[in-house]
Image (cartoon, rainbow over all chains, first blue to last red; front, side):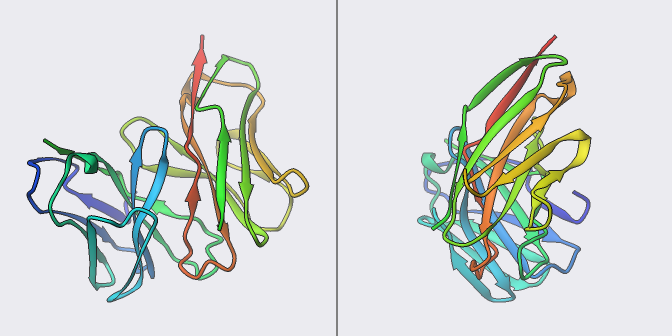
Length: 114
Length: 115
């Protein structure tokens, strides 16, 4: 979607190395989310943010950290990548405090840990 | 806690046939419900949503879903399938007490359309 971009789109990294994925939005939305998508599991929430410097854990947060120093950027860091973190990662944004608008998703980052 | 179950990880229909993708939810409070579609190598796009107005919701590309509280269901239908509808579909739920506006997704249903 035009208002949300993820980088990189693809990355291959080695086990044990740190990796940072970036989500950038131009919509000035308050809420930002990181999900991972794995076959049979749908999308699972890793971390989310409800404002600058305000973040919280999701369902599968172990091994991941996030930071949001500006409204437009939400970074996801894998502290020490493992093969189980091979996945497709999606960032999403939401404007509504009532969550009746749903999310807008980025195009995803395909991460392979070898 | 909220949850979503999508019955059938794969559904195959013939072109022109009815599409029915099933979604059941669990929520402690009246929910908001969503259907998303994902085409290969793309992100998810919102198809339609239920936010407590009409129980029959119309979305893009002729898709519809009906909220049935008694059955805790929100099944997605399309009267006539087309090859272009082949994709993965996700149902999602958000309860209104959810301070983080978080959506919980089902496991997804891959729709295949046979010529």
